[in-house]
Length: 346
Image (cartoon, rainbow, N blue to C red):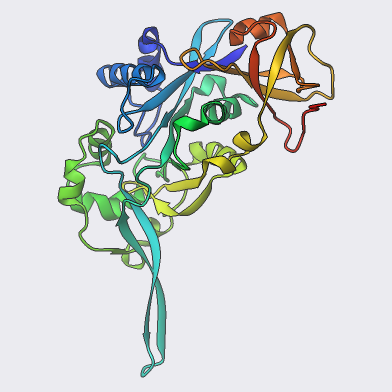
């Protein structure tokens, strides 16, 4: 079974290796051993309830239980912007009009924004190309929402997700060339590295003091504002299916879109249900499969199993129950993967 579980200290070597498979723009998952070790330590404190809100962040790994291979990662920051400023551009509209000349123009402005301060953030989503088969990416992405649904009291009202922006075939960002490179005087990767490691003072010191008129940028830069990186497009589709939407905020480096929603509006939070485990043969049904998670904090695990909840019970095979670390009679959270498929609670 492929499961997503809470990160452990002994995952460090596998995470360093996995991070080497990422490309440019994935700010929160870099192949830096010290940074990843610190991330694991911070996540461990958070799972154990010892982290302050300003530093709290959860981190998960995807594991193939048959081989022990670590295939992907994902994370949740509990409240962004409390320790380090959380900068975005807010895309707004300004109108210039002259009644005397009969001229009317509408232009887009990019304003430095702290609007998302205090939001939870889903982040660090990466799946190895070796595991990019049908349904695996969906499990990795939705696992975070299963965790949020189970531990709703640990999160604020609103949620965001920063997505990688467009990069040219040579690995450069048209938006960075047109904007960031002029203000920061370092290359994209250097700025990305500093930001990823919490060294953000240079942003406040060097960023534009006034709104940027998007219409004055080169056409190739204008065209990528709010555009998602091609490798991140499937992740955006899954997030939108969950209920997140683009509402006019973009990343300050590559202009990738930021999606937002109320946590209580997430499909997983609204539709997942609690059930009791029964060990046996999987229900034949109609080929319906469900996300199933245990209810442990530090040993959280979620995977995909056949069947749905019937009469308050979720039937799991012995192998799937073992992979999820649950036993007969234990509570589990279940989300039917077919949209609109309702469990039988009678």
